[in-house]
Image 1: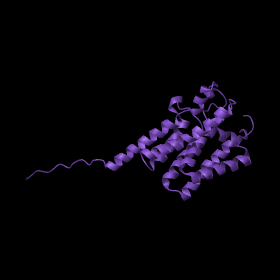
Image 2: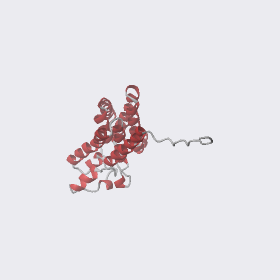
Image 3: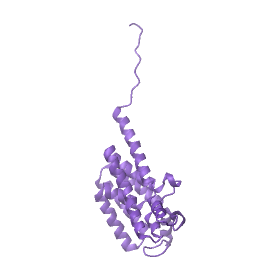
Length: 215
């Protein structure tokens, strides 16, 4: 028809892009909620122990649980905290596939450090970090574990060992692994360093507690 111009249809979002965004968001939420479960606090309370947020460092991780004197609960806390990220990654892999399992694992560490149930006051994330690496990228997990053992043995500083393990893992991933893996590890490393900022200050001042000595 003369003088008639057909209107252009608005472009619709590509189905694959929409699905990828949804999978990313769901993997993020899944990992964060699983990571937010405060196993150390729940287990200590269930066995009649004190509120671990009111003793020692105030963190919810296995190290602070150990300060209650219950080694069995501390060991179980360590395993469950490590299992958060690995479990989140495996579940996300089954539901959404790769690379969204890496998103879920990283989000689990975020949830452990800043759990919504505890007003975003959580642990330092070392066990969860190792769980993510050993569960999803085991070669780097072994590198991280070896680095931790070497630094811990030579310096007797657990915090320094954790920091070195995280930083070296990022470097190894950058050299030998694809970018989604490196992105996950780099994100977790930033969290680990941030959560250990007070420890870094004490290391620089020479006042950090060594392994095997009371704080």
